[in-house]
Image (cartoon, rainbow, N blue to C red; front, side):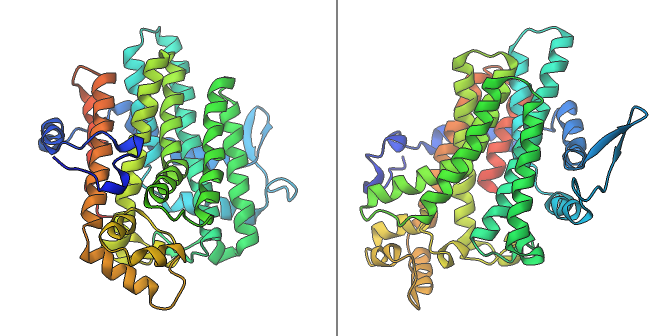
Length: 380
């Protein structure tokens, strides 16, 4: 049985110890038999990018038909080009996929008429659109804050058009996401999704602040920031899907917890890959977190074995040789292994959330479980 290092044993979210035996028993059937996405989810994902691009266009009605205008005071050619930039390249669509699968899971639990299911599904589809738009706007803003020049192997928006325009296009995407969200017409759902943007700002502010000196407080700082910046979007989009289905509060909580656990596992693996994947695999420079002065999970675990990392963390790896020394010590420690194990612990929790939500095995159940496994096993 895996036991967490001593400096986080009393940190409440991680008091439950990890059981590899339980994890393997849960995931083995899905590893042997990958499951295709439900047809309806595949169909929605197939049209999602086009619908996002349409939502970024300025539409007017002429003779009852929608047309698009280049009115310079509404939607200039430059603004259209910039807003399409990330969406045209095509991302992994992880967030809308999870949102749509959770929608299918919750709808399966509720007995509704065909007409009401159609209305519910349309609004849940809008949640998936909004989730991807918020994520993309965040990428634009993050690249400005981090002064990044490449993403997915291509120039960032700020590298191509400058910081001022990049900030404005990120704001524009968020504004259009808000319009899509408001079309749902349910204040509680809108409020839940709005929390995502609030959390993103809080997470970015936490990242800008110097980490605490004590190991336990430092790890709590990191995990809180990770939830705000990554977990909240998964958690609140899954919760919104459950709310639209008319699920009970307990089911909404399960959906939210699944998203939280999956989001944390996703980011923990991301932080590991920053140390072990190649720049071509990541689409950005390796060890980028260290170069930005960020102490992520691998280096926090490594500091438990190598206390000489503490002053480097406190000064945010700002002195010559700090990044190289930290990178060497992380690779000599159990930091990467322990980070993967912590990700697997959250993966186990996410799978348990699904087992409670969908006690009977089926396509949607297995797709959600597989979505967890893919994040734990990914190499990029």
